[in-house]
Length: 326
Image (cartoon, rainbow, N blue to C red; front, side):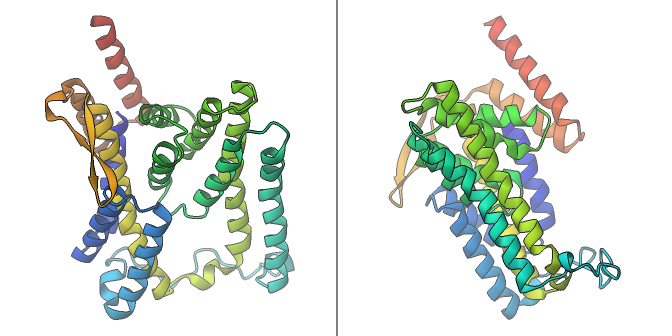
């Protein structure tokens, strides 16, 4: 089911973002960069943004929103009556917000990481999830590709199957999808507790991951809100974000392919490409049941627009029946 969900999300974003061949090329390049070359997500975002910025100067028509999606000249939220000093843009206000926000963001993480007996994994998670919170372009699915790359391949906090289970859990429970970070934090610290009880370490890991994911968001909102209206209609910014959004499609598709290989094939080997491992499934180990569930989930979400909870529930029931019938 998770594979179908991610594939549907990638296509949904792609329909809005890939409106010409250049955007498709950026998306394909991002897919190859993360899947084959294992380029970290932040560098993909940076590269796509630079391509969009430069492309917007050279061929602006290719990097602007298509007709019908362009921004109007009207102000989205009129600020005629917002005369209070605390909501007006100023260097002093920005500095105060920045200092308070950074303190609220970092001090709790430092305190937990430096506490006696605290395992190294907590400091790793504090740094990583703070970093992830700064490059969350493209929504939860794009960030999940980055988290999967780091948590499974780089740090080894989770096994591939655990990451898929975490995404399925996040899809089927209340709250935003990005709460899968809490699952990653818990399992990562639970499996690497150091001198702590595994459950205690897991709870601390979940706390660190959640705080590092959400605290920076409030900082960006309060810091940038007074400048939002000034940025509306900025063609350079629009072109930059167009490039990033196109790259996000490739990143999300990478997540779908990675999860698909892990769930649909019983045997997967790795081959070295550009100095890094690339998964290569054995076609003879294809699991028809997993393929059928993935396709059915995709069709249910994309064609019939069913509620995702029904799709997850039906997929879980199908899996249970398969196990009981075996």
